[in-house]
Length: 366
Figure (cartoon, rainbow, N blue to C red):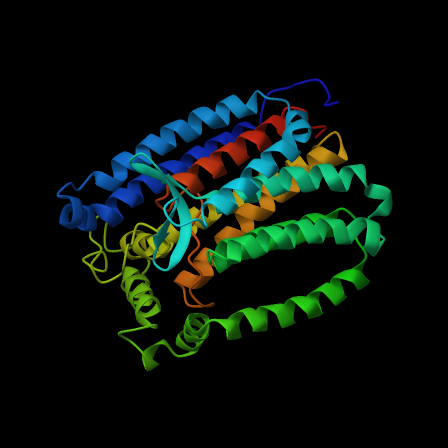
């Protein structure tokens, strides 16, 4: 059982709220033109994001008071529920299709994205499985294979939507957890070779993925098509310079960069707040990751350590992928920037995940 409770990590709370406040500010700035045009309400996206931010913060402080061992007891049940949702989202009439992906389930005027919640469910379950089967982790059959089988089933269901970006974050997070738990390097080399082959097969199986890669390598070969988003993103970041054009002064949000409040919000942030603003956000993420690593190292048991590692890996991978896409280092994947991008499911999940981290920090030995 967890050790005696202390105060939660105060710096982690401050950093999380700072990122959230920055996100709310940028969601409004990036979306006001689109919202006015589509809904005749410049505050449309901000109001919805504020609602989820309020619910998410309340959930974060509520979860902070729940002993993290509770998630160990309920991990299997939560995982089953998330798998059921992944099945339901594929059923026409239940699942909602947007931009070629059937990834949402409508709930009244809002929608939820089950693939977001399966990430946290897998983190909780894998932490339980790996901590309970520590003596088998160096064996492939009893240690690594069962964990990987579960992860790849979830990955396969997400790919049926299809949603390669979310699947990649989930897969990367789970592999880091397995590695940290003590799996053999030789097994990871074998897994890496299989992974490269599988990735190539996934890319070749869908023409739009091939187009994304070719446009990433040379976006100017199709500036009005597959290379459009990358080009417009770079055209936003470039003029930002050191100090930016000023809050609210973005030019790319005037229907040049599609849905700028979502995956490419960091481009608008860099355009308006410049290199200084972008660096400030990256420093906040670095602080969050540092506190998360410290919490993982100070957790009183292996389950708490793995749970913290999973949460912090999920956030780190998502940040790296999103910003790499925005600055043109990797192909477009459709991944939100945690706490910053518009999106209720992603924001709520991230705040709940921080709540779990905060509870682990209350039992920390450091």
